[in-house]
Amino acid sequence: MDILPYGRHQLDDDDIAAVVDVLKNGALTCGPQVEEFERAFAAKVCAKEAIVCSNGTAALHMAALTVGLGAGDIAIVPTLTFLSTANAVRMTGADVVFADVDPETGLLTGETLRDAYARTGTRVKAVLPVHLNGQCADMEEISRIAAEHNSQIITDCCHALGAEYYSGGAPGDGKFETLACFSLHPVKSIAMGEGGFVTTNNSEYAARIRHLRGHDMKRNAADWILDDMAFDQQGGANPWFYEMHELAYNYRATDMQCALGHSQLKKLDQFVARRREIAALYDTALKSLGNKLRPVAKTSLAASAWHLYPVLIDFAALGLERGPFMRELMAKGVGSQVHYIPVSSQPYYRDLYGQQAFAGAEAYYQRVLSLPIFPAMTDSDVLRVVAALETLLN
Image (cartoon, rainbow, N blue to C red; front, side, top):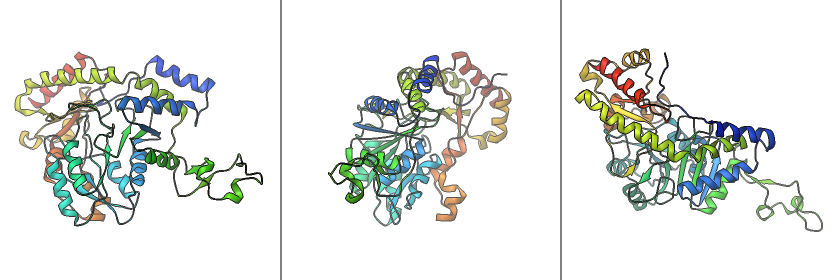
């Protein structure tokens, strides 16, 4: 039986050819594909700068370091997100204050952000809003609140590549944030294997991230401070020389990954268009299930990229357990997933901050189930998913 996973990348012959061309003719890493992809990505999201890196977690970590997060600092993160949003803060030594979310969308709101600020009792250096499932948080309201507290914004856009604000612009264009982070994992809007991006309109921040990405190796003579080692007796720069001024990381992406990502980026619009068609078909077909299941509430802020198609099922009211329900769906050839377990409930964070209660996140988590959505799905695949749900729920 053909299993429909909750997400799947789509690779075409042109994607494979782009990677093969690098393997045959190009530099495998630190070559021209990196800069070409960065320019194309920046243009696509309308940001001045885009820095590619090894994965979305690396993007978030470098962004957190770039705004100066460190020991003694605080950042607010919605508890309903993937582990990396909070972990990137902790990797700098800063502390996380978790915020609740809307129980119908899973998104950070102005109200839940204000509540998180009220619980800090001190200055918050950064806020990390998360665009979830392809839908966008209310960035206008969030940015207004963050500005009141002199907090910088790092937006987790890992689900939102291809989304568009109805007011104009797109996630990552810098309209509402200092830095934005993307993931190009295989189940995201486009794939480069593993990969990520940081976008910004701040050229100084972009330069710092590029240094953080490569061990802080400074090869530009204007940055050097060890004149006795850096220059010869005639004042010429020694061609082998570089300096490292701070501890940094190897978060580079390869030319092979960038060739794949660049090829995929050219198809982003068609991929997102197909995801929207599938979401609309689900919206219509799922009405047959009445009040037993409903799609996650739609926001009025942006056109979703539909990275995921989540539905809410009151399993307790229906006398069902989600685990067995998912296994029965799988037996019918339908994969599903839960996005996400509230990060604040993870043992690491419980040990660190104690057990915390977030009513909105818990209500969302207890009911949510992500159904299959990816560009190669057919209309009949969608109807097959709905038929399996009908059988189990009825």
